[in-house]
Length: 246
Ligand code: NDP
Image (cartoon, rainbow, N blue to C red; front, side, top):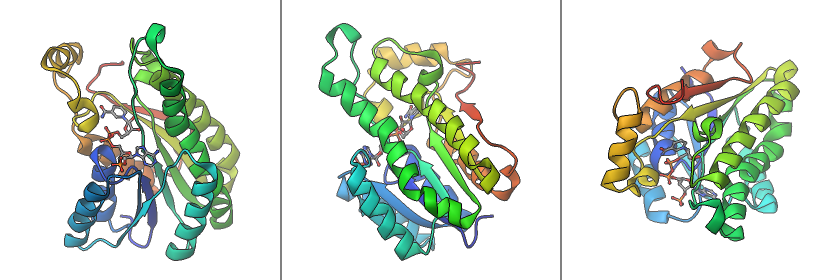
């Protein structure tokens, strides 16, 4: 159980992040949810969490902005009295073949999916050092392990995130802080709702379990990694993918 713990979930207002927030709240954690701009989704998630008795605060911030994240982390630690669990979940896609990919689309995905995680970790680093305990959980993707045609920017960011995870794990292990990565396969969220029927059928066919995963499948693993039971696991990458990348 996570009673008495505080958790920051980036991208906690929708999709996988929302399921993570609900699962951590169910286990008793206090929550700070960070979102980019979809106010309505964030308020809906807040209402849902509050209705099940969770304590939750919302922060609107672009995690790719180093200075904005610095101010955000200062504010969150001041208001929550410190952070025990950081879930770096926020992410975007800007798909296209390398031949046609715009520089701005490459940069946007790297800035949010990789630099955004660096920014959050960098500005909560001293919080974790001071507490001499903590959990950092980064949401990567099987695409970071396998590559994917049409997602070079996304795959590069998610592969980079695995290197970042292992480096942070090594830096903070002696301080009692673990850092792990969770690599979902294809999960039913707004992100995968962009797939057309033909693409979806092709994915279903490729997945040994013959279906996309649910956000809760990822959330339950994140809650385990956040718990005391996972205290000796660090620098690990765990797939939740119906077997697509075994
Ligand atoms: P969604 O598109 O459903 O939700 C994305 C969330 O991230 C939203 O809360 C969004 O806020 C937030 N966000 C996006 N950009 C920023 C930013 N610059 N600063 C702060 N918050 C931001 O995504 P999913 O739930 O599908 O994905 C969550 C994570 O899981 C991502 O890292 C994704 O790469 C990864 N993943 C997803 C898979 C899938 O199949 N869905 C598979 C493998 C990995 P707002 O609503 O305000 O825009």
